[in-house]
Amino acid sequence: MNVYPLNSTQEDMLRESNMETMENGFQVTVYYEIPAKRLSADELTAACQKVFDTNHYMHVHLIRQEDGQLMISESPDMPNNVRHFKMSHEEWESRKPEFARPFKLLEEPGVRISVIETEDKTVGCISLCHIFFDGISIKLVCSAIDNVVNGVPIEDQDDIAAVWNREEIASYESENYQRAKQVVCEKFRGLKYTDICRQTDNPWGQTLYACYLLDYDRMKHIRLNAGALSEEQQHNMMTTICVAAYALALGQMAGTTDVVFMTTNHGRVDKRLRANVMGCFIKSLSLRISVDPEQSVAELIGQTRIALFGTMRTLIYPWLHQMRDLQVPPEDQVGTEMNVSGSGIYEYANIRGVDYPSAHIEMPESEEHIFMVVQIREEGLTFNVEGSEALYTQEQLDTLARLSGEFTLQLIGDQSKKLKDIHIE
Image 1 (cartoon, rainbow, N blue to C red):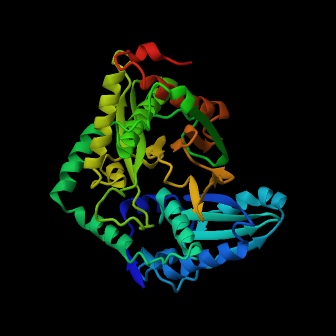
Image 2: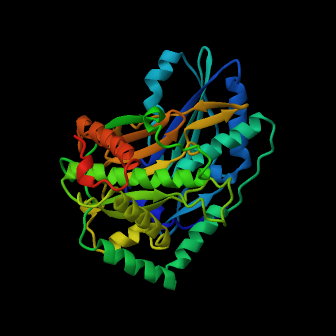
Image 3: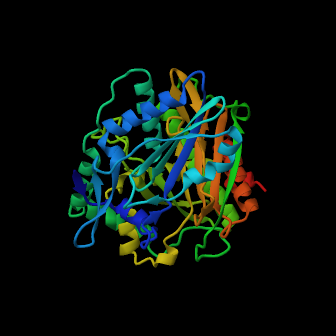
């Protein structure tokens, strides 16, 4: 059994738990449907169980030490078994929200896999507790399952998650940490996250969801697959433009030109990490971007690129430490967040050579402030926004998704144009 401390991001997520029941709602649940004639429910169940039995991180959970401290444990002593259900397609459709329930951190592992057998479909449903897993992890779990189905050997990923946590905690005494702390605190001292919510006490409400598609037919004046740029360069270009567009949309809706919001970095570019690492390496980062209408599109994109690059250089200084050192009260430690993900995060599961698109099951209730994910898909870019109805209206989320998409289209165009000339209602 490998026991180790939580990193700063995990501690931050843990603070949102119900400390009496030890339930935590930071979870991501997706499912994909496969024709039963291509893969039976029994085959998928056996493949998923093989993944559980092979990789000891699939049993990751929390334990409470004698001194009361909560630690992470990777131990097969915490059993993890695939749940197999038989039901009609109609029943599955009505019961989907049940599979997105919060995790009981002291009583169950941080990953649940369910196989639902309907009349003609085999449904694989994966639910990950975000404290232990990030968005890339769903793709890695799907890949591991696919390997088993195709007879490809899978390996235990060892204890790299524990190594990462211990190295991060040790880095808090370094000179790099002190330099990063100074830079971040100087940049964000006295600021609040830009928000458009109706109240700030963050009550629970039904999850609202909005999606806006910017299809590639409207983006013919650029050629993402022209070969002039590598796939990584293309993705980085679109990431910068989408982040700038989101800042522009949020600033317009909030009535400010100094926009502060959160973004995430999954840390997988680190050469120390292997491609099959399933643990949580997500980092919450703050961005500050000016959307002054007198600046040009080129200036906005340039400062956004610098802001994103700057966060990479301050990864060693965690967000939770930023809140502590800036003495930000808990009620202000919430903010809007956006992230850009490629098609390799969790959109598709590849089973026997065929890609099956996955769908995200929202928790029926949430206390979430605005969270946007821009997905690079085959049909175009989708701007997906969610938040609690106690904080936002459906119209607000629809507008933010639409504006972010439309501003993205505009920012791809004439780089010399002033921001005041691309105002969108």
